[in-house]
Image (tube, rainbow, N blue to C red; front, side, top):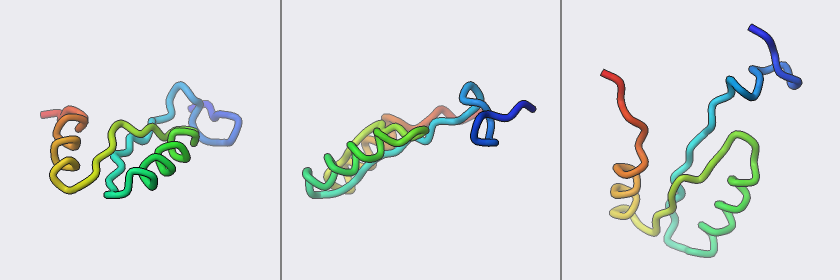
Length: 67
């Protein structure tokens, strides 16, 4: 397998890390979202303010399972 510039897999083979942010403070969520979205290989797919919102967002953004 060919390696990318950093010695890891090439960008075309790299997997994106999908993140669901959960915090009751909107300012904290916004700051974390900005930092994580700016990082290579990470994308924030949803944000939630409490546990119930987190469950709903997890259901809505969960990757499909293979059977």
